[in-house]
Image (tube, rainbow, N blue to C red; front, side, top):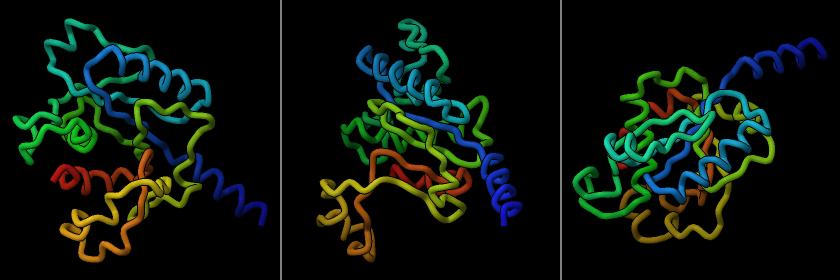
Length: 189
């Protein structure tokens, strides 16, 4: 049994994680990014950390919003009606839009097994091991957020056939890269 456990731990260690988070082009998010980046390093979270930033290339170059030890992927501002398909002004559209843009257009697309999606105002207290959470192709992990209303309102019933089975999750998501590549183009829609 000990040999099986060691083999399982070695297999799990071989699985890699790419952590991403979404921000806007503002000093407020620079501070959040620096804090998340520092905590990512301090807990020794395996894999790279990438900031998905809603900003024009020109403004990004002018402001030089680079944060040490964090990769950056600049994408259009999906919170603006001229960049989203829903013709609505809503900044949270940048997370699904930014993830889809990153997967499709990144200079170095992710090759890691898992993608861990965080919020910019989070601080990591310990590494997150997606494999130990049961994440695999076809199964993702997140946290329960009981205060969310989006799973029990009329909007959910309008889009999900079995809305009564929708779980209130959010904050962070760990998903297999292959699943995210299939899901990301549909997320903003």
